[in-house]
Image 1 (cartoon, helix red, strand yellow):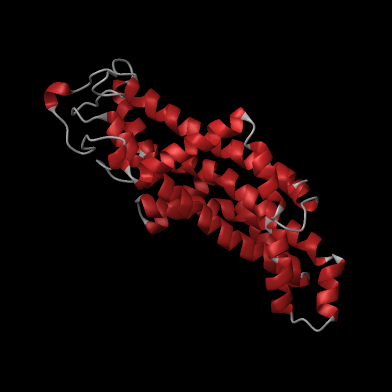
Image 2: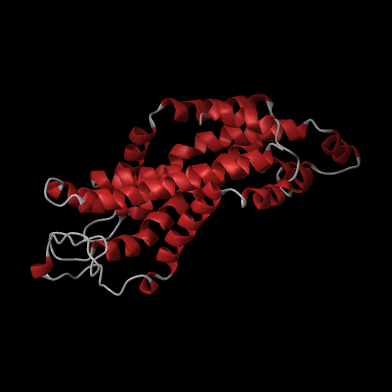
Length: 291
């Protein structure tokens, strides 16, 4: 989904976020949405309480059990050092999901702030901020993320910040479009006419009523952030070994892709499932916001 499509949805979004709850209840009747929610709930459980899902140590393996295929004892098989792959996937959820949450938070806070200021102030400030956004959009996301990582250094947190920076421009454009729509409404003009200060009107009326499209975009960006962080981990810019981060797991298994397919296929399928689930939930939120 492109930024222009999100801006088009932002122009028709309702004024409050209360409609999302009713739309969400209707959406629970859909099997696809239920599967998406269940998938995200499962991986969230991995991150919160990994001990409930596996008893194997994700960092210590047994050499005689190296490269065993998936079985009842090892659901996802074992890697080259005999470590249980399912355990590493489960314990890696906290790194991948936590990094994705940081990335979305960075993009959401920075982008929404830029969009709020640009859409509400207008004039020269709007032009200057939007030119900054255009510059960010002109740089490929992966190249921009790598540039930020080179400045900050390697690591999961730095990779998350880098991914968050790549989404600032998208959040800013969507937020600006929604703020400009809300800014022209009668009740905002009435709030100014009744003596409300600029900051008070922004806080009480403009910001709360311009979050619908931004919330839907945040859900979409969560899935994209997981994919981007896994990509950076695969390239070696994320968590260092032997951290069980999802992208790093796939990178470690590519050496054995011809003889131990499960090392790359099973973690990769999990990443795909989580990204698709986040996108499905985002679509439902977007539909509820546009009603």
